[in-house]
Length: 622
Image (cartoon, rainbow, N blue to C red; front, side, top):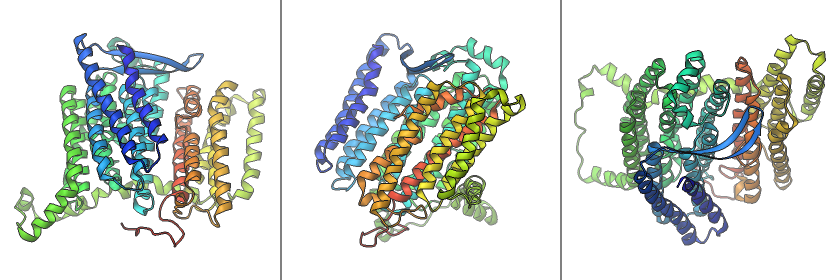
C-alpha cells in the first residue's frame, strides 16, 4: 500500500510530459489530458484514503532512495502521509479538476492555451511533491516548482507590461522565502547531524533532547520556517504581493492564490509543529503575527476597488487566523479552515467576472446608498486616516522597496567600472590568487583561514548584486551569475576539504546551463540590433525557441531541480560550520539573488511589450 504513494507523484509527471507532446492547436486533446490526469488522481486518492483508513489510518513514512551519499551526509527522497497530507491531497485534486474543466472553455482560442495547461500540470506536480514530502529536502524540490510555475502563470499575458513586472516582483518575494528554507535546512543539519525526516521530528523525546541543549538554534530554525511560510502565504510583511499576482488568468488566480499555493505556508507550519510545539515564545510570536495580519488585511480588503484585490486580502486575513489556530495547537480546526477558505476563494474568483457585470447593471437600475457601519461612529479624522492608509495597503510595498530592494540597487549601481571588457581581468586575478591559496593551505595563517571564506563569499555576493542591478550589458549580467557560483565554490574550499566530487555536483549544472544561456544571448544578439536590460523587449514573440532554451538555462543556473547543482547547493551548506552564520548568510543571499537575476534577464529580454512597433501591444496600464 505504501508504494501507491508514488502514483500520486507519477501521475502529474506523466500528464505534464504528455501535455508537452500535443500541438497547441489541438485544444481538445490538451484539455482532455489535463482533466483526465487530475480526475484519475482524484479517483485514486479516494480509493487510497478508504483503504488507508480501513487499515487504521497509521502514519506512512516511505524513504524512496538516496540521490547522493557522503560521509555524514545523505540527500534522500522521502514521502510522508498523514491526515494533513490527506486534507491537502483532497483539496488539491478536487479544485484542480474543477479548474481544468473550467479552463477548457474559459481559455478557448487563447493564444497561450497549451502553455496554460502545461504550467497547471507542472504546478500540480510540485504541489503533490510538497504535500507528500517527508523531509525538508524533498519539500524544497516541490517548493521550487511552485515558485517557477507561479512566475509563468502571472506572466501568462507576456506581451503586457504589468503582468511581467508583477511576476518578477512575486518571484522575488518567493526567493526571500527560499532564504529562510535554505538556512533552516542548514541549521537542521547541524542540530540533528542528518537530513531529519518529519517522521523522526514527531518523536518528542528526540526533539526535546536536542532543543534542551540548543534552544537558540531551535528558535532560529522555527523563525526561518516562519519567514518561508509567511512569504508563501502572503503574511506580514509580505502581504502586498498577493493582489499583484492576480494579473494572470482568472482560473490561475483561483487555483494558485485563492486555494492551493497560498495555503502552503500553513502546511509547512503544521508539518513542523512537533518541532516548535514547546517553544512558547515562538508560538506567541506566530499568534501576534497572524492576528496583526488578519486585522490589517481586513481593513485593506474593505477599501479595494478591484474585486480580485478584495478577495486576495480577505484570503490573507483568513490565513492569518489559520496561523493562530496552528500556533494554539488546533490542527483539526486549522485543516477545516484551510479547506473552507480554499473552496470559498476558488468559487469567488471564478464567478468574479459575472459578479462585476451584475453589480454594474444593478447600479444603473437599482441604486442603493451605502448602509451605515460601525466606522461611521468613529471620529472623522481617525476614520479618514484609517481609510487612506488602508487604501495605500499600509505602505507595505514601498517599505519593501525602501529597505530591501533599493539598497541593493544603489550598491550595484556603484560598480560603474565593472564593464564586460575589464571584468575578466579583475575576476581572473582574484580567482587565480584564491585558487593558489586554496591549493596551498600550508601558507595560510589560521587567522586568515577563518576570514578567507568570508572575503570570497562576500565578493561573490557583490558580483551577483551587480548582476541583479545591471541595466545595460546582458552578457555581463549573465557572466557575473556564473562567476558567482565559481566564487562560492572557492570560498567553501577554504573552509574545509571540499571533495572534487562535490565540486562536480555543484558546478556541472552551472557550467552547462551557463554555456547554453550564453549561446542563446549571443544568438539573439546576432539576430537583433539591440539586446539590453534597460526595458522589456518581448523577443519571445519572434524567437520562441531561443526563449524556451534560455528559460531552461536560467532554471539550471538558479539551482532548479533539473541539474546536479540543486544537490550541490545543499552539499555546500553541509560544509559550513555551525558558528559561521555570516558565511551561511552570504552564500544563501548569493544563491537566492543569482536565481532572481537570471529570471530578471529572461523577463527583460524575452517578455513584455515587443520593442518593434509593427507588433501590436497592450498599453502599459492595462
